[in-house]
Image 1 (cartoon, helix red, strand yellow):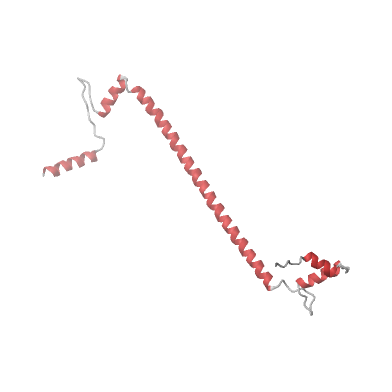
Image 2 (image 1 turned 60 degrees about the horizontal axis):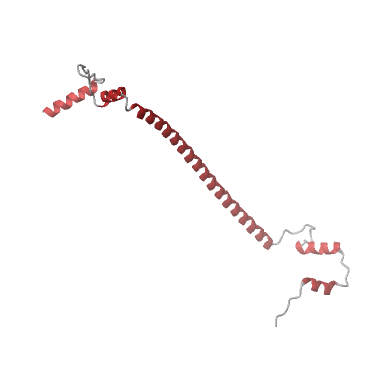
Length: 156
C-alpha cells in the first residue's frame, strides 16, 4: 500500500559497507563541492549566488528584527519615564494637599474662638464696634482718576 522510504543510513550501509573511507580525501571532495576552484588561479570562488541571496535575506531579517526590538524597547522606556513623571507630580500634589489640610484643620479649631470671629467680621464684612471710625485710604491715584472719569462720563 504505502512505500517506505529508504533511510539514508540503510542506503549508506548498502553502498559503502565494503569500502574503506579516506577522511582526508572525503574532506577535499566536500570542500571542492562547496567552493568551485578556478583552474587558472588557485583561489576559491566565493559562495554561490543563491547562498549570497540567502545570507542577504538573513541579514535583512535580523536587521529588521533588531530595529523592531529597539523601537519596542524605546516605547516601553518612554512609557516608564512618563509614568514616573506622573507619579512625581501626583506626589507633589499630595504633599500640597496635605499641607492645605493641616492649615484648614488649624483654622477649623480657631473658628469658634471670639478673636477669630471678630477678625473675620472686620476683614470680610467690614464691621466695626460701636464708637470706632473707619478710614479708607486709596493706594493708587490712577484708580481714583479712572473712577472719577467714569462717574463724569455717566453723568453726561
